Image (cartoon, rainbow, N blue to C red; front, side, top):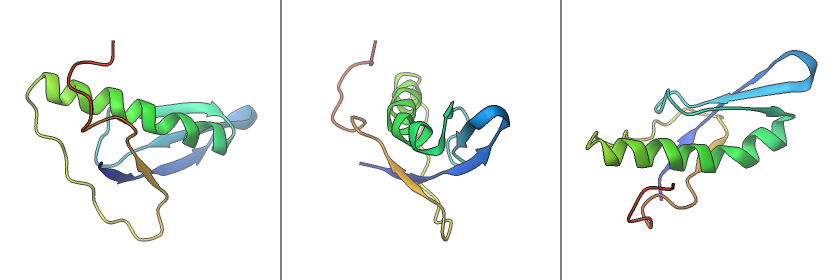
Length: 83
């Protein structure tokens, strides 16, 4: 189960953006940091499943010291697409 470093960026009106340097297509926006981090594994799962469906290589997680880490919940166990 891959674990990727996340970047957390506060936005306006309590919104928080979570992005992943290694998986730039994975972006989460939610009200509050915890809500964004709670959704992040699912978003990573969807994007990485898309990589696999397109036969794109799955990026190696980088080691960003001090960054919050997010693990995918289902990637690696899933055989087919999420939808």
